[in-house]
Length: 433
Image (cartoon, rainbow, N blue to C red; front, side, top):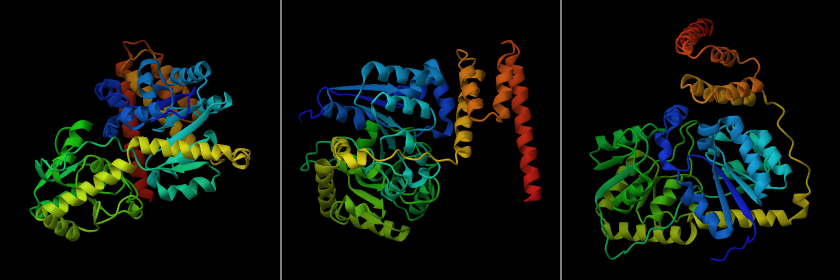
């Protein structure tokens, strides 16, 4: 494929880029229970981008925070943009590590900033919408979020979730090692309930992932998809109990696996149900279809092959990235859109400032308790700048200025005090309400 965007540089602001980062002590403390599936952004974004642009620079902002701190990381991004003068900066959003002022400065340099948002089915109202006025384009996987973005004046582009590349398959030689497989965390949404019901019906399940077995690498996951007679996908979000089109559906099909997925409205836009994938709505239907397709090999393999062909020809990461930038270029050429007034910023920002403050407090506590390069100073200063009334951050900041030998004792006492206060406050609230 030729590179249509010659003489243009792209900077990819991403996170969790290398798998090895999972084992970094501070990173584990930062992520905590959110340490989820590894997203291979090299496969999802970097490699497709190199097919379109002559130069793609990757900047892992979480890794840099661990090395230089939150404030310096943001300063590095601005310096990088001023040095490279990229055509685009793509920001794969995570939490509050990238500051609004950083995005604003980048745009003032003449660079087009694209915010790539995930899980907008449940994150738009409390997270994604806040960033709209600091971005030129917003990319979302959620069809239902598109009108919400537009209502706030955003240039929004809807695409499929992260997918990958197609795996070559010789459909005359099919290896099947598992009956019915599921790959994913046990502690997500209602998965455990589905699994327990299937076990009660004596369905032969093979479970992989956090809580079932050890973590499964991306490569091993694809091999499981490829060698399972049936691959299950459950579609609920972790909060708000909403249905969501997940990247897992496309990944299974790209691997040539047979997909049996919980039905999501709108899935018909991507696959023909009954011919390329199969759907279920309840436990009775799921059990019935598992039994049927385990006993009907020819039909099962025919559907798997059809799904693989559709995904291979339409839903690789390269297809996804190409369509996104085709839409961006189309919108950019429309001068009426390009000249429209700036998106108004949300004025009700008290809650979001508290979230920023809490996020930087979290980093500050980690750096302080681990005595890591004095990076706690900038993190706690940022926390207080977003919320001067964050008394918890003020307390940790005071402790940080005590001699190193006294800090562990003071931190233990302070954390015990905070736990006791929270417990008493909780009881008081229960008494009154």
